[in-house]
Length: 62
Ligand code: FES
Image 1 (cartoon, helix red, strand yellow):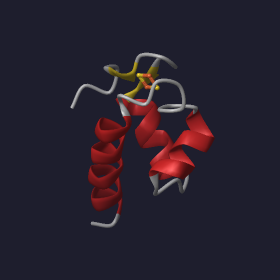
Image 2: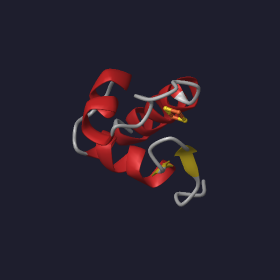
Image 3: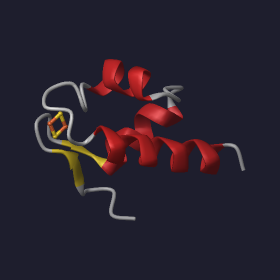
């Protein structure tokens, strides 16, 4: 995965920043939105963010 890739253009949030949020305990879309601001403007990125969260949570629990 490219951690520098921007997942949320509105807030310029990268894959890596979503991972950091998940690693700090944000395990739902709502918590990641609160922590990073990602997905809080136009919302088109929310599905992608949710997929990233699912993946990072699964990795964290391995
Ligand atoms: S691209 Fe993420 S809120 Fe618009």
